[in-house]
Amino acid sequence: MKISTALKALAGAAVVMLPLTASAESTFSTGAAALTSTAHVDFQVTIPKILYLRVGTGSAYPTTLSSIGTTDLVTFSPTAAVVGNGTAVVGAGGDLTGGVETAAIISNSGNVTLNATATGALSDGAAGDTIAYSQITTTAAALTGTYTLLPAPVLTNATSANVVLTAPASKVITADAKWTYAYANTTTPPAGTYGGINTNNGRVTYTATMP
Image 1: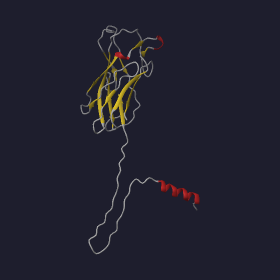
Image 2: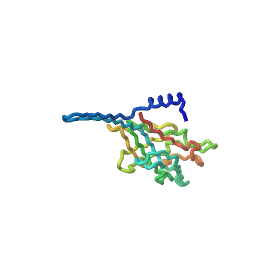
Image 3: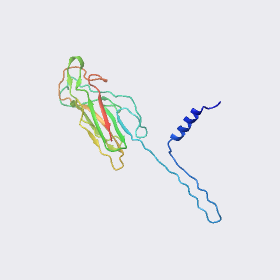
Image 4: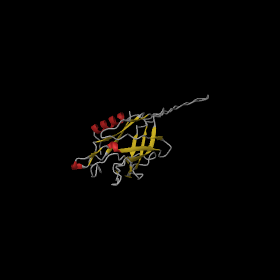
């Protein structure tokens, strides 16, 4: 089958446009005296930027950096006898159970800024009552003991203050922690269920950014 002139021209243009990702050469020498021939090879390595954030269920960092679409639910259920008495209530749920979540950041392009955003106070829906996110505390503790401790943003009804991780000279950050959530229990709200699975302002979004 004959190839059209237009197709040949297109193929030739495609070859010309191919990026030159490596270059090598040959040198031929001949003669009776001692001979030397040289050849050169150029190398280039391109490392992409990476930014990995895990809060709760996620991939097995640092060996596996991938997206896992699981959102954990942490719940608090103070008994009637202790509501509002100022004694913190331990949570249930979390990937480490007991209201405890794995938190980790890995990056390779300088400082990282981390914050947490809620869409308002925890609500009980139609009844119109709320519990402020200041009632949910987060305590960071060593997880692996190998990496930098990852501080937790202080939750608010909007966007928290930033936590800034300063990169070392290598520009690579590896930080992790166990984040333990607790209900401060310093107020006595009306009876009801506040928040939930992506409802009634129950979801907090953690965001990490880097240059």
